Length: 214
Length: 409
Image (tube, rainbow over all chains, first blue to last red; front, side, top):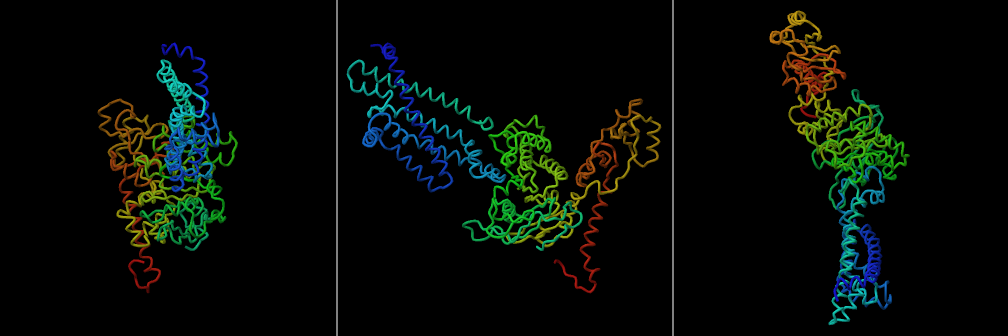
C-alpha cells in the first residue's frame, strides 16, 4: 500500500493520536516547568543544593525509558498517569539547568541597583531576575519538549496515549507490508508535532521577552 | 571625630548632621582583617562629601554600609537623627538614592519604567508616577517624549548615567550615595556630566556621599573631602581648599600629588575674580567710532557686540581695510574662548591659552558680555592663593612666638 494513501485512510487516527500525544507531552512539560523553575529558583544561590539538584535531575535522564515506564506500572498502573510522571522526571534537567544558568547570568550590578533602591529579595526575583533569565529558561523548556516528544512514543508500552501506538503496532507486525507504513506514520507524526511545538515556543518567546533584551 | 554643630564657613550645608557614622566596622567573612575599622564620620545636610583614597582603603565599603548593602559588623548608622543600623533595610534604601558605576539600569524595562522604580515601590498612583518621571528626565536634560519609551541598550554611556541619576532621585530622597558614578565614561563626557550634576545639585541640595579614587574629581565635586588612608584611618576630612593649602600629613600631600597650585584653579571660579574690560563697540558703530575706541585703548582689536550685548566678532583695523563697507558682525574673527561666571579658573585658563588675543570672554547665562579674563589675572589668583597658604602655614609663628617650630604636624 502506498504510504500517502495509508495516511489518508488513517487521517482520523493520525489526528486523534496527535492530539493525545500533544496533550501528554504538554501536561508533562507544564509540570516539569513548574517543578524545574521552582527547584532552580530555590537553589541558584546556594552552590551545594544547586549541585545536588543538578545531579539528581541528571540521574533521572540515565534511567532507560523502557525500564522506567514498566517500573511505574506497580504504583501508578497503566495509561496516561505513568507516562506523565515519567516524562516529567525526564524533562526536569534542561529546565532546572537553564533556570539556574539564566538567573546566575543576571549582571550583579543590576541586582545591586535593585536592592539599593529598596526592592525586597522577592521583588528583585520577580521583577528583575526572572524576566531577565526568561529567554534562557524558555529555551530549556523548548529542549525539554523536543526530548519528551520522542520519549512519549515509548509510553505506548504501558498503554500510554499518542503516536507510540502506531509504532508498537508496526513492531508487532514486522514482516508485513503495513508494518513499515505504521512505523513511518508514527515517526512522521512525532516530527510534525516537534515542528509545531517549536513554532509555538518561538512565538511565546517573542511575545513574552521584553524588547529591551531581545 | 567629635561631632560639631556647625559646618565651617564657605560650604553650602545647613550645619545639621544628616548622616552620622559611629565606630563603624566591617569584616567580610573569611577575612583576617577589617575592611573598615572603627570609622566615625559626620556628614552635613546639603553637602557633597567625597570619600577618596587608594584602592583597598574601604571607601566603597564605607559608603555601602550607609544603605546597608554591606551590613556593618559593628557600630551605628544615624540617618537624620534615626538609628537605622537594625531597621528594615528596604525601607531605609527607599529613603536613599543609589547610583553605581555600572549604572545597573534594568535592561528589560523602558527608561520611564526604570526611573519610576522607587515611586512605584512606594505605591504612588499612576498619574503621580508619570508626572514625576517626566520631571526627573527633564531635570537630567533628557527630553521625556524622546527617551521615556526607549530601552537602556538604545542609549549611550553618558545618557545611561543620567538616567541612573534620575532613577536615584525618584522619590526625592534627602540622601544620595554615588559609587564612582562617572568612572566608566570618557573624559569629555565625564566633565560635562560632572558640571551638569553640580548644577543639578545647586537646585536639589541633596546630602551626597560620593566615592571616587580620583583626587581631581574629588576636589571638583566635593564640598568636603574625606581622604581615607586605610581601614581605620581618615587621613583628613576637610574642605577642598583646606586639603590643598594645608594637607594634614605626608600621605595627603602625596595623594594630592604635584600641581596643587593648578588644582586650586579648579576650586576658584571666574565669578570670584574681578574681570578686566576690553574695548567694545555695538554692531551698528561706524569705522571712525571703532578706530576711536581702539586708539584710546592699548589693544590690537575691538570686540563687537550685537544689540543684546552678546560678543559677535573680534575686529582689527586690518579687517576694516580688507572689507571696506561690510557690517561689523561679518568681518574679523568669531570669538571662541567664551566662558560663563560659574566656570572654574582652570576652564578659563584652558580657553585663553589657545585664544586669539590670549583672553577668555566672560558672558552671563544669556550670553551677554561681562568682561574678559587674561593670563595675568590667573597668575594673580595663583599668587594670592599661595600667599594665603604660606600665611596659614606660618600662622603658628604669629600665634605662639615662643613655640618651637615643628616641621610637619
